[in-house]
Image (cartoon, rainbow, N blue to C red; front, top):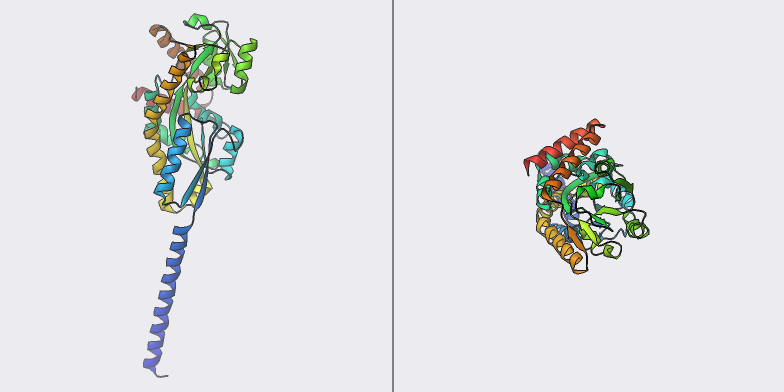
Length: 343
């Protein structure tokens, strides 16, 4: 073979290799484009703002991913108790969970800061705090070292106090046994009102009120009405405290396994639905309030001056609890500053 022929052969082989490489890359890209990713979305409730968020988020992700992400919703703790749902999301058997941040304290103490009474004074205020850039940066990043990637946070509903006898004034709380979550952020403020905080699961509240074990309980009207708490007590004092926020967390390893364009879909759709849930949540709360009075229950508001006094009492109590742990104190400083800024 002469020199010219050899040169032609080399050129042909080089061109052939380039074509094969290009075809390999194209086939790899096509395979990535054609791959589908299951997305289990877990939450402990149904027919509340979180459920409607999950439905809207699932629909948006499937549409915007072109069907490459396949969401499936599992409400009412179908995939296990709240601690099991959190563990499943950390370790990958669940791809997404919608759960109030205070339940993530085993992951990081600072998650609890959003459950601080006295932080926000309305549902609309709570949504503004959740959307604040400094708060989003803090809260969505808390689980990063423990297998979680935060994509959204929103206020689900305000809390109230249900009781067998009416609590029309702050003085009426004195001597009462009130159910709260097992959190210093909830126990200390209730104790400041002269009541005795009693840590108890939600499922135990109705029988405990009926049996006189407790006099009342902190909870949400979006729970009291559909779960027929009026069978145990008919008076609800709308303190609005604490705000019930919800974190939307996805499994970090699953998220990082997604192509870059699908990661953007997961993040962007979560943020869009965070903004869209505000009027939905407000509507659900109002319907629950109407349902409560329609079924014979009574809604009570504290006198304005007493509501303001209660908010200050709660804020002071929470600040004292937070300062016992420097990282928690710093987190509370960020969130409380945002609350003042967005009021």
